[in-house]
Image 1 (cartoon, rainbow, N blue to C red):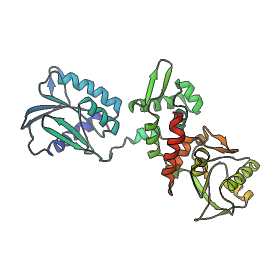
Image 2 (spheres, rainbow, N blue to C red):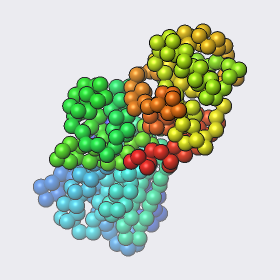
Image 3 (tube, one colour):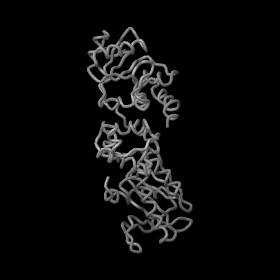
Image 4 (spheres, rainbow, N blue to C red):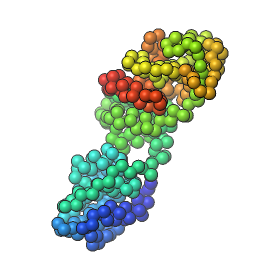
Length: 350
């Protein structure tokens, strides 16, 4: 959303928030007034039982932490020029990280989704939990496109490593321009640490959590089969058939998780297959079934899922990061297995 659109809808959002307090009255409301040679976005002069206050509102097109931090610096400069003032950030949507930042800095926030937090004088207003109807779709498409996800896999697989743009582009097999674009998006979220030697992930858990919520497992092509064999025996048969057919495979989901965290229990094997799964199915004499499958062969939407693949128990297994993403989209205790993997494997590696 552009800043002028936020300005157009901002007045109503501010009034809606303030109207929740019955003893508060708006005495004056100005849009883009000049004050001591500075142009403010909004100033709302309100009267409460405790006195009069001036709400100085800075409108931003994004509610990401880096943008909010810059707005807070501007608001502090304005606040010093106006007595009994209270600084407020207005954005299409305030993320949880930004909400926490505002609370720490003593700054209020209002978003166009209906979330807000104002705390001044005897006034305290808070509304949380409204979902974002203004998702920054272009930004999300840029960050979670198949090629951009390759960058995230590299960063999350080695979060302590420092990267230059060119090095990261080479490792992820993507363009320099795409790495620069993803880097800018991560910087807005304050998920990158910029060092003299390059940059690295500052908050890998937040990055993985958001990716898991945006990850679309349904973009893969999946094929369900039934076999009288099961578990590791069946997976070994698939691996041998894949080698015969010249097809690259790697275990994922529960099949991978049990190799990382042996306490995991499962009934359906899951393997990525970088090629035609029917060739493997014919080799092992598998029966394709619409339901009741105990094996899923997956044609990935991008070969980047194989990044970080290693061997465990003699079989190729996708990285813990990719395993976590796939588990989070599985029913029948998939999220529970993902949390165990995070706790026992991923977090200790960070």
